[in-house]
Image 1 (cartoon, rainbow, N blue to C red):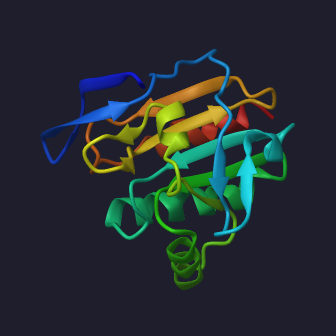
Image 2: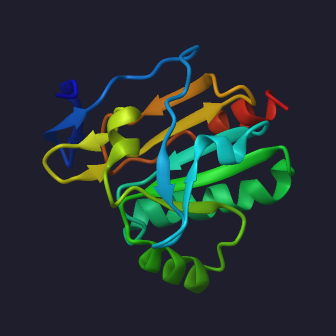
Image 3: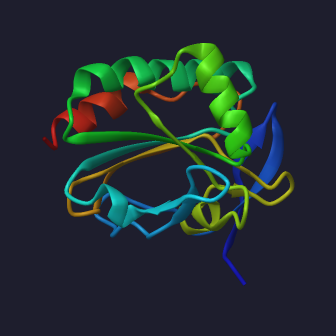
Length: 172
């Protein structure tokens, strides 16, 4: 059974339970298998040799998640080819694709954790009560070592965009 962490996060002030470990700077990033489409999956190895900025959102169809993904899409255009900007949610790949088309988002790689929630459990962001992934940011270096982590304590708040982007830039 996966580790559960209570009292570390809320949704509109109400406590939620996060499943999985709390990753820290210096940890080896857990591998993952996420869906890029219903039939195509990717793992951490698909981004080998690149810095990874992983933006985790509960659902792309909410205001903060929309703004967060748009903000990192803008940043991705200026970050260059050595940094992969990934957005992970439990939304179905269909919904992610529809949203990207409507929003004009084309620089981030949208990935879905809907099948097994294995990313959520491995990165300590799976919300037990909702089966969504908690808003968070991870920056991994080219060797898949965690170099920056932001677990938000309130699901409806924005992450520190500038700090995450700067952390990724420093690794190139």
